[in-house]
Length: 488
Image 1: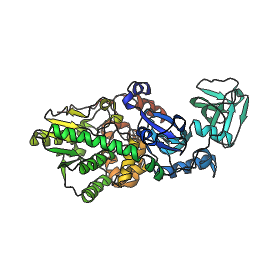
Image 2 (image 1 turned 120 degrees about the vertical axis):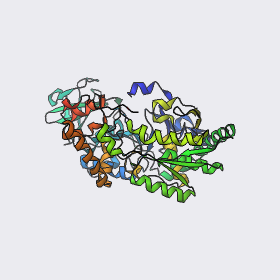
Image 3 (image 1 turned 90 degrees about the horizontal axis):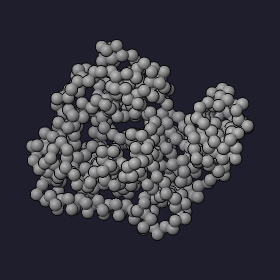
Image 4 (image 1 turned 135 degrees about the horizontal axis):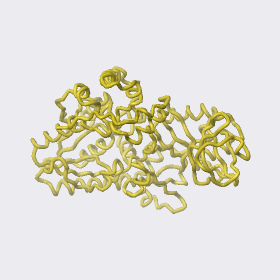
């Protein structure tokens, strides 16, 4: 979904506050407990969810910044604080994370699909800092605006070469207005920004995550209390129904599981095992059982997934036969056997358009006898992670490496960046999957790029598939492969 479409749905915009006094993020509810004055914070809004930037990602970011801008450039361009946030950029063809620090956007982490490697791109705040510290090549335009496209170095009134691949555009007035990439004697425009004054904005303090937790205690108390009340009302309204929850190994269901334990009500926990979960997820389920003193019931699919792939083709974002056979059918069979039940889930508005207008209580579309309750419907990702950290709850280590969502390790909704993580951690699993894909590709005359660049993730001529094919210089592959088999 495009940026303009998401902007029409206010429930999907993430809003946080950035304390200008402590130089750290606050949940919106924190202002009522801290009695903040308007000049003590600024409001930040995102088109996607926002979360902490974890240590392995931070180390990657530091390395990439220092590789391009010099050994001391990270503190000068990005931040001196420990507190950084990440928000995924949905419009990018693969994995791109907006990095937030000091109340602004110093840079972006993005996965280069052509080379299958990570790279870094300056953001508005980072561009201003880099120019001020003379760490980046910059070019002054003869006007206060510019068009997208390609410029020759001779088009600029001033060009200061600092040997970097990235080039910051300055207006005639000297404001930072965009970013380009240098290719010999030409500069390709990659981003236009609102004019940024060329003054060096320093962070107001070297904040820590311990401080973030302390200052958000009141907000977490409010969110937790409200979620527990939602649970209590739903359980009271449907007191004649047995209480269940589904656990996936992800952060959403982890928070919900802990809330249920705190509520004191008796409940049963279901784990839907597709047979394709990450090994880390299986390990987490066992740890959660041990740490929280629960007995989790496993529900499994009966189909042979790899045989179905050879018959139907690999599942795709526009061909989700896997969801029906691996998740829907086993779960519906369970609900039919149980009868009328109340199911607590970790659904959140920020995850998708279909969930943006959900109510706390809702009927399950596939099974009308099942009533669902979503106690953390209004929580953002930052709130979830602060809750997990404050409660010292176990979580899936794949999040630390950059996974935004968890599911099957070869899920077509995953990015190439996530596939590379799986390939490094579990090469035997990935090689098995590639063998199946190559066999299917050979039978239909599809090239190696179809496997290597994950083109199997779309069957139709999807927009991102077209962009990806252009980037790898194979536009001829952006066609409808036409191998759908009807789901029965």
